[in-house]
Structures are given as C-alpha cells and as structure tokens.
Image 1 (tube, one colour):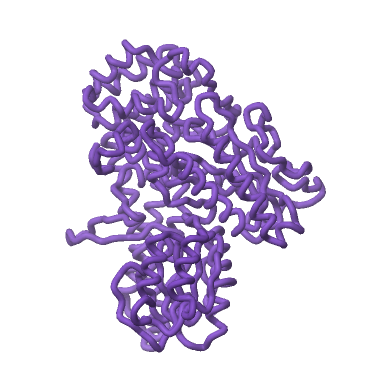
Image 2 (cartoon, rainbow, N blue to C red; image 1 turned 45 degrees about the vertical axis):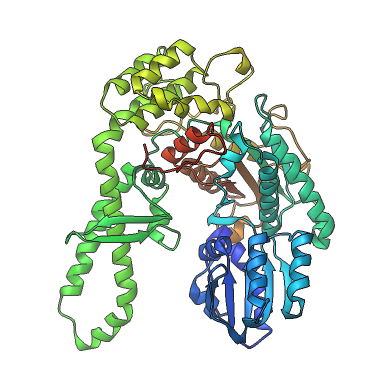
Length: 592
C-alpha cells in the first residue's frame, strides 16, 4: 500500500482523496482509468505520485479535454471541477457511443443544480457514483495553499472589472473547502481597512458559507467551532515584503532566476542543460529553502566535499561481495548526488546575481523599508538613501522597486516629486508600475483621500540577530505572533464570527505540560492559525508561517492566497490593472 506524501497539507489532501475516491475504487476489483481536468491534474500532482495511484488500482490517467480512445470494458473515474466545460466534456464521452463501461464522478466542490441536471439528463444510466469532495484549493507546500487563481488580482483590484463579486464568492468557496479538508470550523477575523473593504466582504462570505457547511454536515454540527482562527488580510497590509530583494534561498531563487512551474534549468560542465524540480520531495531543498543565502553558501563546501567523496568512492576498487550491495544502493545514491549538484549550481547562480547587482541594492532597500540604517540610526532623508540607486546603472525594474520602497516609507509623496522620480527612472510611458498601487489602497500621492491610511504597528525586534542586508521582517510575521498570543487589537481586527473563548493560539496549554515537537501529527493536537492573503502571498511571508510554527510548537500556521507572488510578476500585475477589459495583453515576467 502506498504511503503517499509526508508533507503537511499535501498529506491531509491525499488522505481525503483516499477516503473518498480511492475507497470507492477499492470496492471494485476492475482496474480503472482516472480522467482529470487541468486543475485536478495539478491537485493530484501536488499530493501524490503515479505509483500511489497504481497501487490503488488506477492504471491510466487521461486528460478530460483531449480526444481519447474508447475502452468500453473499463470503468472511468472522473475527478473534475463543476464547470460547464467539464460537464460538456463528460457528456460527450457518453453521448453517442459510451467510451467506458461506467463512470464514477467526483467534483472538487458543489455542482450547480443546472449543470447537475444537465449531466443527469444526458447520461444518468452510466453514472454509478456522483460525489462532491470539497477540495478546490491546491496544497502548494506543507503549510501553504493557493486558490490557483492569479486572474483574481485583476478581477478584484482593477477599476474596470465587472467580476469582483463573483471572484470573491469563488474564493470564499475555495477557503471553505480548505477548512473542510482540515476539519476546522474556525472563527473568522479580517483586517479593517478604511480605503477598501474587500477583506471584510470576503470574511462575510466565508463566514456565511462556513455556517451553511456546518448545517449540511452532521459531524461539524455536533462539533461546532474548533480551536482554529482564520485571518483574512489584504495585500495593502504590507506592500513592502513582495517588492524587497529577499535573501533567503527560496525567495531569492524565484526572484532572480527564471523558474517556471518550479523547474530550475542549469548548465553542467559539458555545456548541456539540465532541469531540476524544486519541491518537497527534495529533502535538501526543504532543508535549505528558508536559510539566508549566507548560511546556504556555508553549506556549499560541505556539498562539494560530499560530491567529491562520493565520486571517489564510485571510482575506487570494489570487491565482488560489495558489488551487489552497491548496485542496490546505486539509484538512491545517484539521486542524492544529483540533488546536491542542483543546489551547488543554484547557490552559485544566486551568489553571482548577488555580487553583480543585488548587493548594491540591499542596503538602500533595507534602510528605506525599516526606516533606519544598520546601526539603528533613523533615516531622516529617504531621498538621500534612494539617490545612489537611481544614479547607478541598475535595471529598470530594480529602480522601480527602490522608488516604490521610497514612496511606501513616506506613506505617499507629492505629485511634483512623483513626476520627477518617474522621469528619472525613464518610465514616463509606463508610470502605471507605480501609479496603479492606488487601486490596492496603497497611498502613492500624499493626498487627503488616503489621510486615514495607517501603517500596521510593528513588534520590537531589536534584540533579534539579523544580517545587515536582511533586517526587514514581513508584517505578517507580527500578525501571526500577535494572533497566537491573543494580542490583535479588536478595533483593527474585528471578529466576523467569534472564536472559542479559550482560544489563545496554544489551546491554553498548562505551564506544567511539556511542549511536543512540531511534526504534523503533534500539531494536530494543538490549534491552527489560517491566514489568507487577498492579492497574492510572497515567499518571505510563506517562510514566516514555518518559522512561527516552529517557534510556538503548539500552533500550526497555514498560509494561503489567490496565487504565489514574485516581485517582477507583481509589478506586471500592478501595471495591467488599469488596462480596459477589451485590451489584449501578455503578462510576462521577462518583459521588464
């Protein structure tokens, strides 16, 4: 029997799929075909391997939208989103001549009545099972989920968009399926914002849908509210973190290297190119991803030494008796060696970027973000900090990022000063990279319309050891710690629905009770803090979820969003906000 993935959320999702789809499959000894749409393909790819499916009696995996050869003697399992496109594709498989003996249908979420009736009317006699399993989110990492909806950014923040309410409703449904999968009925809170109320609207929708789910689910009804809290925040809470040059391994890699679909491409000694998948199956990646690049580079000599020793061992003389043992270990040995080589290349690649360009930017960025220099002296004139960046021949995107940090530090600037900055960066025809932040509720001009915009108060971290080029702490880390310690101000963080009165982030653990380790099984005995960021979450904020979980031990922090942000991707999203719906455009991270 396949054990499946061992990584937090992914493990929970895989278990839910096993408890529903796979359990039904086991009832029949006939091998089955699994048919997936684009979303469910990504969902299953995130939480299991083909070998896991094979061991459960699924022999073939097919694309719902592609033309497939009929296999009338086999039963087909359809795992799909309840959309008109999916339903039409399903009906086409049975409309004229049935492609399969029978259909077992599983929807990721609630199927609208009109679509369900259409499907039932067309091919009811072939449908043996039809269920909704409540998983319409992607488990991105052990403690990170996404709604796989980058278009939501434009749908919510664009001044021209007509789909805002529909998008918020869809996101609410997806968040509710996350809670259902985690078996949590949380109290809901949101960040109060005077400029926009999208977070409040989403909180209202989520709370309403959670209550409805509770009414429909007998187990939830009996159990009531659980020891969990759901915080909904807007991207405007912290515009700094996704713009800064972050110097931890994962965040740095996705900022500086063109990594697509988590695939890193690198050159080897003979000049050929290789690809590596950066995910949680790679133990070395999990170990290094949240380390500062300075700490990662300390690991490099060790990796080089291990690779060298491994090669010498492979080249050395081997006895006949030892050959059998070596052959058994060879696949794992080669895989381990390949992983070390990948990270040796990636770390060197990142250090090359850092030394060439990023190092010069970091001091100015950190001073502007923190509002003080490395010695703790307050930055009295942010323009003096910004000017060296503007005068240096940095790439345009890097200058835009620095200008934004300058504006954020002042809570908006004058129109005259803004125009001078735009001219200096030479983006007169593309000033939307800066101006469009106003659509998120972030003040760009220091005008009365944003008079009530107030920055989040920060925790004192002066005693914490940090690198001079990495002094900024994402605002969400403060929020996580304050929520767990029950220190969030109710005026700034109203309750949409009350949490259990005893909730303090650690389920009121007795002082005499020893803290357990932070493995998923241990944490399940504690409480959960779920944070949803409307408008994208950065890699540095994802890192904070792990750091706070590790520090508190008894509270697991799960963080999610519409999508994962990269700095250049966010700049493109911002730029495109003011485009009319009729305009066609291509969002490319390489454009800048």
